[in-house]
Amino acid sequence: MKDIIKVPSDITKESIKTEAQGIIEAVNNGDIEPMRAHLQIRFYEDMIKVIKAGIKDAVLDDAEKYVNDDSFPAKVSIVHSGDRPDYEFDTEYSDIKKALKKREEKLKASFKNGAPVIDADTGELVPLCPVKKESELMVKVEFKKWNKIDYVLLEDERWL
Image (tube, rainbow, N blue to C red; front, side):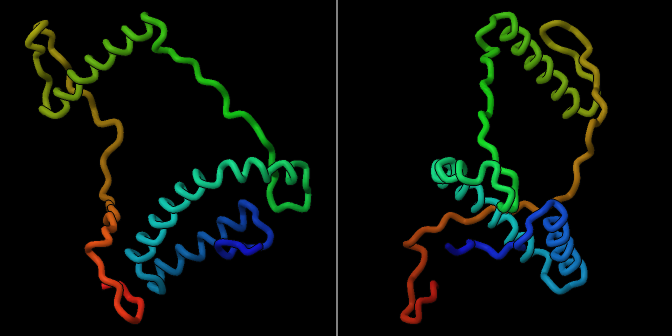
């Protein structure tokens, strides 16, 4: 069997940090173009989500042989994710949640206004909440949807 990507033979939390630190240093030293690295990382993040969903059943079938296998580079166990109760079933909970949502909308209006506002329905003064977490500048990456009509395969197997 072949690996889909090259990984150290002894996978540990420390080896993951070491590999990551090597890439961080290469980007910060100018050996790797920062935007190219960011784009590649986003590509792998999105691809990994798709792969994990697509191989979930096969992994569950295969995992049994690695439970209690000390020669495998990671501890493997098969567990249930746990049931989650449906709180919406309870009318009191549902009513409180709706009231909280309404209150949140009023507070958002005050925040967007930059000053306390008066609720037109109740006459209540809705306070201006402080910033909980300041926004930060970030790069947003959106992958284009590939449309076969937009591309032509050249004789040398390059897409144009």
